[in-house]
Image (cartoon, rainbow, N blue to C red; front, side, top):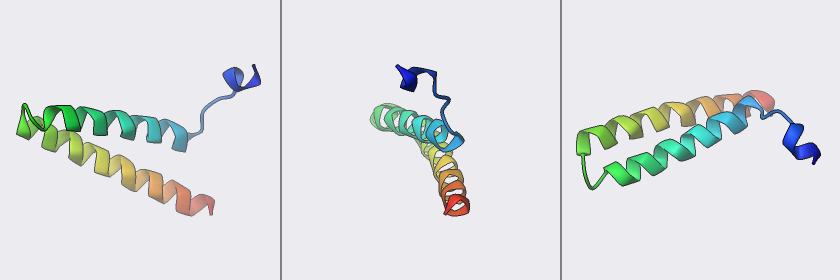
Length: 58
């Protein structure tokens, strides 16, 4: 029950967004290559942000 009230950290939010973007990228990769490339680029930016935050936390 207490897990429901816990706020997500910035890293958790970014990881969720990264996972969603990668799923969209995979779906678009067989349909629309340019749109999938945009999603992949967005996901890579999110990955860099996650790594930066993790390195600051360590």
